[in-house]
Image (cartoon, rainbow over all chains, first blue to last red; front, top):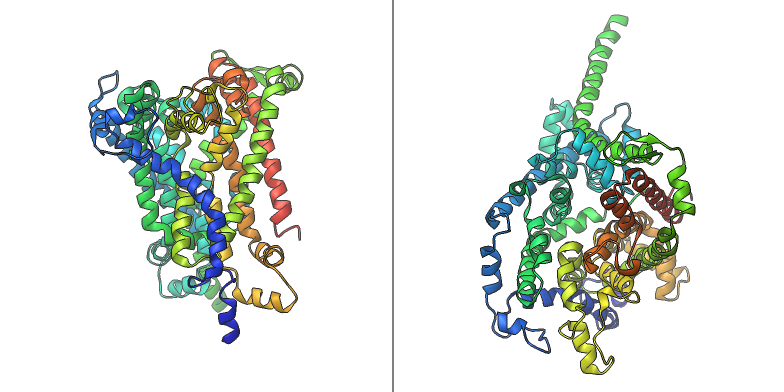
Length: 293
Length: 310
């Protein structure tokens, strides 16, 4: 016990603060500052009134915060005359559909690939691990051709479908299910539960941390993505919020545009941050099982 | 006896068969989506890479011509794209990866509260999308004296005239590297952090009894070997993330090709040929090369951290 408390200061994962930790805090602080400065800058820029945006030399911190940038952002309707609320609505629907279906699809597949025996299981697992190395941006063009062949151009669901199979997501879910003891599943089979019931009543509740992680990863990808709107959608009414934000901020140069751009970035960024803060302990729990063996 | 065995055996094999069927039902939706949006596009890219295809007429088989042209006839590729991509990939990939390990390692030595806050700060830039942020980076790196960086440097007297950062042959690539590194401490960083936090404490105590003398030896002989699987996951995520984020140069400078090809990476080169010049076969060959490069880097990571090669 005595030895243990002597060890406390330098050991990994200490339970409380000790002055020997200060050197680590000092070492990481410049990097932490570098990481957080752009974020502080967006926050401040987004709430600056017009005259502060014109300040020279530019001031980092906002003096008289105002919502004017947000108001202007919401009043501007694109050149096509479609109100911003429409894009916002599209994005929310797309995000919800992707979250629900990607969680459903990857947890079902994860359960089968981890706990059920069937032909081709090993091959699917191996191909999925291989697909962790897949860079989607490399196949933008063939993907476009596939989507075109399927007749999905200008179809609303083209925002959803490409994001349903996420190799990293399935991988994390499967690793997490691997930790669940087989006895638990065998016992419920003896009790007469069928596979669907086992999946719903045993697996799903036990893998909530992994599900939280998939939700965050999917949300981040879908909410921030303007690729599907750019590549597959010509009809303006069907485009998403991220796309609208991009074109709006890219086309509005000048100082007033910068204020709106900051407001737009903040709207894009905040939901990601909030969801992550709420779920961060679950994410860390999942990440502990993330290793590739 | 035999009939009894048959009675017992029969329902069991039936249950197993039933379970197989259900297993297929469970994996089918994923496999279907995976096939449509990942497998088929990759195969299509490979097939198209051997054709001339202008997106209008039917692809015409040309054998290895595209690959030969890439390697012998594409001056932009050889002079700018390859050196740029290598410089970018080496600094952002292994550099960012080592940085994320060191950060995670140092955070793991801190008390839980301060660790959580700092981890959140380090992770949160990865929640922004590069493209959305590009507009704001453009303000920070604006080419006149209203740009934040120019303003600071002018005030400090480091420079006399504002620098047009994002159109500059000397700075664009560096800025891309900085911006990507800023947003690269994502899932891989969290995985490594979680891995380090979950290393069995007794290993450290045993290690010190066995003659480990300092923190560096501790990191090398206990921490890293214990978290090899997470290190491998982090490495694969870092490699993929590096290449996926590499469209940033076009977003920052606002044009493809980037000014004097200063920030032209292989991903931009693919899009330039595919969407601007409509040489789909050529673009596909470039895509295949990119996928092979990513695959080779990942194999290297498997060599370093995989448990199979031990």
